[in-house]
Image (cartoon, rainbow, N blue to C red; front, side):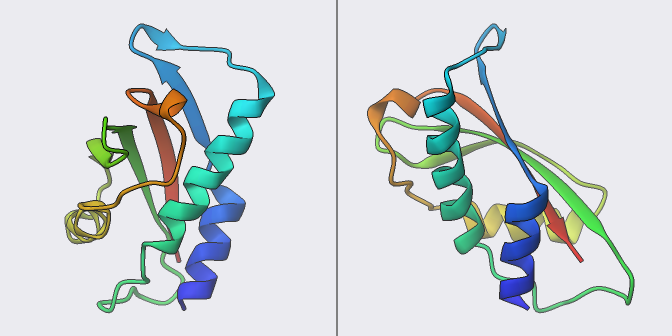
Length: 115
């Protein structure tokens, strides 16, 4: 199940990088860093044990930044499923990302798909 989640997350979600004032158009080298961040995040989210109904589809959007100590700082989690929202928040709560200092204080958004 975790493999299915990771594959789904990697295949479907995207990261958008924006500055404090709005979306920025960064060079393509930043998208390589973003993929690395997405892989780190997806590897740290297990498929929830409470499961879903057959044929269910849940999408969660997580908006976050990276703190001075490279910790993931959740800004907002958008989901209609409160239980899944709390689960994702708990999974990402103490996550420290392996990235360079150029990503500190940038805001990112990631869509996670659970099915």
